[in-house]
Image (cartoon, rainbow, N blue to C red; front, top):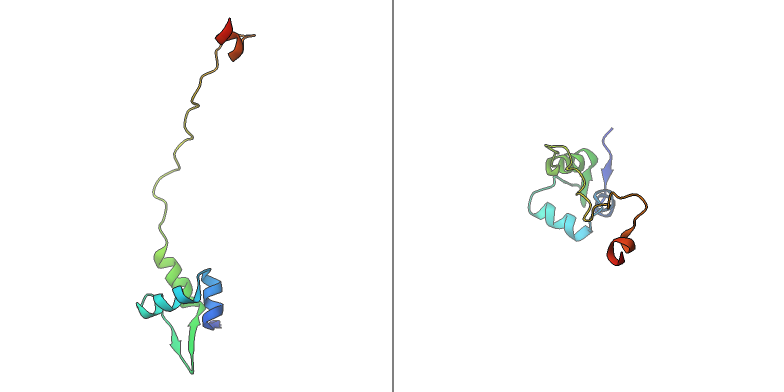
Amino acid sequence: MNEVMTEPEAARYLRRSVKTLQRRRRDKQISFVRDGGIRYLRSDLDAYLEARRIAATQAPSPPPAPKYRASGAPGHDVVDLLYG
């Protein structure tokens, strides 16, 4: 069964403010039902979210290389390299 939500419930579901939800409705971005007030169907809210979804098209990039390299000489640390 399709859940019917009030405006505050729908805003909470989308994690947006009621004003943002009203703006999206006014701009005809979200479907709604006028039945003695404004109501939203959960399936319409899910469709709105799915339409705004941007799918990943490539694997995440590898982490950047460290800024400084290790000295490579055993037993030496940065202080030894700087002050001999």
